[in-house]
Image (cartoon, rainbow, N blue to C red):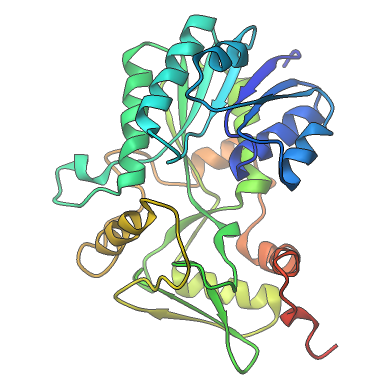
Length: 320
């Protein structure tokens, strides 16, 4: 693919930063929007070849015009910061005015719209609404649906994906998911960038309006814990619980997301993560884009201890 200018939104997030790193490494120009230059990822991006930082809020129409001016490609992952639907629509409108040729939007399904009595997840329904607007305005687009991040796991007391350190040195994951129902998993930092770059190489003619399930492993909680255990060489147990413990302060709106998630994927509904009427199941499309993915066992062995140490934890040093 010839050198292109790629506009990237919320560039310090795991998905967008992954693309910025890969695109820079192969020689593309990256125009990376962020709200602040503070933080490790922002400083990393600033040092990458061909990356231009565009600092400011997405509510600023002039910033959006500058972000997309002259860009042929765009990768957009909106967040629940502010009015996500309004921001998502404004981004798509600005990209269309600027003549962006291929717009890749990181979306998610709205289970409530499937007509099967499922509750919707508030932070996914907003993404589905933005996706519909992108389709309505005729922007040449492809939609990626990210699986559960491997990188969500931590032994810090965050809700839903806490790997709690146990007295025997092992870990325990407590969540409402059925222990034997497989879920889609993705190492966002490692694999989003190469996959999305291949979508851009293929172009909108190959993926016109397509939804791509971006996940490389389908593992049940029990299978995941077995792989995690192999990776860190410690016992890892799964315990299904009806609720989600919230022991720390969480962002506005996230409590409602967790409550809905408990109902949707817990024992009341046990809905599929990616409904078949919305999107083809992974990992076939993801593997067509990128085969060098990092699975959960490798993540647990190579990355999890490093991230834990960066969070000030020392369990990995015990016994040395």
